[in-house]
Length: 113
Length: 116
Image (cartoon, rainbow over all chains, first blue to last red; front, side):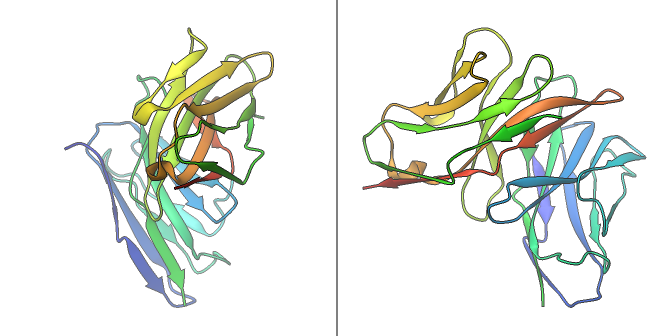
């Protein structure tokens, strides 16, 4: 079935370590997004990419990095520069010729110990 | 800039009663509006959308939403609530962000609790 796969589901990291969250989609969507979710704050946009080899910063990009080498893949690296990385991270994709809804993965929960 | 407000952090409703989850928005131009639902530790699931046409939009699981342009609102409704409807609900508006790209801006979410 078509969809978005995020891995790992749960991840624990020590302070000072970088960690990479995987996001893969087989929906043939051009656009992909990363959101961060914290309790009571809704979803905040970290980075997004409209096409391969191009991406833009969202509202809270500091301390994060991304790459888009393949259409299907949009990994997010949480660097040691991110001051408060413990959160639930959601990846989504979007059909630019469709009617606008985002399709979401199941999320990755990162906990910094 | 676009924005979405969900004025209630939590809504409690008895099973079998009608439910309403409120949403107001601010965006330039014609709005594309969405509702999503999230169960604990899961991703967001699309419920319904308004793009144009009939102001009453029907979606998944018996939910519907009413678009009101004059009040800039897009409230989510269901005639008879189920315990399984208990979840976190997000309203979102799509806005053009330049260079042929769009972003969804989300509200902070409303936790719906349906009491047996």
